[in-house]
Length: 126
Length: 365
Image 1 (cartoon, rainbow over the protein chains, first blue to last red):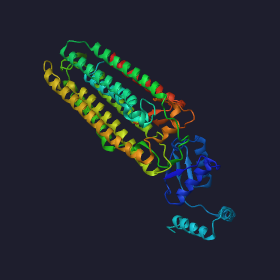
Image 2 (image 1 turned 45 degrees about the vertical axis):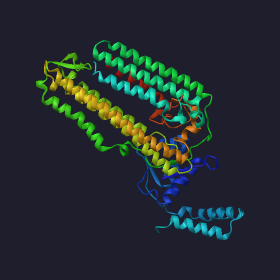
Image 3 (image 1 turned 135 degrees about the vertical axis):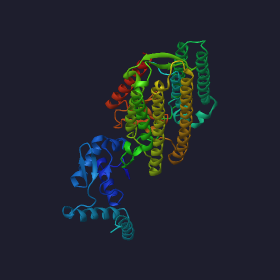
Image 4 (image 1 turned 30 degrees about the horizontal axis):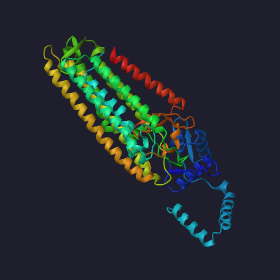
C-alpha cells in the first residue's frame, strides 16, 4: 500500500496522489471498505502541505471512490465507477499516450507488448 | 509525600540512559546530535569525545552509588545524593555542549534535499500496536490492590508507613485515610493513562521512506515502533506493579514487624530493577539489529535526517514550521519528539514540562 510522488514532476502533487490511489484501487491492493490514513499522517510522511492531501481526498470523494466523514477519516466505498461520463475522455487519453510513445520512438510492437502486460496485471481477476 | 528510596535507583537508571547512552547510541549517524563521517568517528580525534563521555559516565555512576551506599550505612544524608545527581547532569550537559560545538564543524549536511517521495497508506492506529495481554495485565494490576484494600479496609492500621530507607526501616508515617490508602493506586492509574496517550501520539509520528527497498524499509520501521512501544509497556507495567505493591503495604504491616516489609519491598524493587535493565537491554539489542538492516537497505538508519539536518537544534530539538508532522523520530534513534515548529508541538512540550514539574513538586512535598 505504497504511494509514490515525484516532487520534480510538473504534475501537481494532489493529482499525483489521486492517480496513485486510483492505481492501488485498480491493482486490487485497496479494496472496498479500506480506510485511508488521516490527512496529517499522509502529509507528514510525504512532507507535503496538509491542504495538498485534503484536496486529493476531496477529488477522490467527488469522483465517488471514497467517502469522507468528518472525524472518522476517509473510506474507500467503490472500486469501479459508472463510465458514462468518461466515454469521450477515453479515446483522447489513449491518443495522447500513443502519440507520446510514437514521437519517442517506440514501435507498435513495444506499445502492444507493454499494454498487454499492464492489462493482464490490472484485469487479471476479470 | 515521599516514595521509597528505590525511586532513587530508578531515577539514576533513567538519567544514565538519557545523559549517558542516547548521545552516542547512533554512532556516527548522530554523534552528540551531529552526523559525522564514519572515518572521523573512528579516528583518534573523533573517539576522544566518546572516551571522555564514558569516563565521566562511569565515574559518576560509581560516585552516585557510593553515596547511596553511604546513605544506607547512615554516614551521609539524602542531600548528598541530590548534589551528586545534579553534578552528574551538569557535567554531562557541559560535555555534550562541548562535543556538539566541536563536532558541528564537521557535520555532514544534506545529500538529499527532499527525501520524502513515498508513503504507506496503512492507517497507524494505537489499537493496532497495543498488546492486549499487556494492557489487561496492567489493568488487572491496578484493580487487584483496589479490591484487596476495600475488602480489608477495616484491618488497616491507623498509621501507615509510606517511606522506607534502604535498610527497609520505616522512616515516614501518615494517618489512615481513604486518600492516603489509595493514593499509590491513583498515581499508577495516572501514569498508565499518560503512557497510553503518549503511545497514541507516537504511532502517528511520521515515517520517511527511501526510494528503493521502500516496502521492506517501511516494515522495519514499524518493527522499531513496536519495540519502542514494548519499552513503554515495560516501564508502564513496572510502575503499576511498584505502586500496587506500595499500596498493599498497609495490609501486611503490623507494628514492630518491620522485617516483613523489608523483605517485601526489597524483593519487589530489586526484581523490578533487574527486569527493567534486562528487558530494556534486550529490546535495545533487537533495535540495534534492525538498525543494521536499515543501513543495508537504505545506507542510513533514518532517511529523514539527511534532508532535515538543518532543522535539528543542538541535535535534540526539531524545529521545522514547514513540516506538517507533529511527532517525529528522535535523531538519536530511540524514541520520539515533537516538532517545535508547529503550534501543537509547542503545546505538547508545555504540557510535558508542566507534568514533569508537577511530579517533582509532589514527590518533594
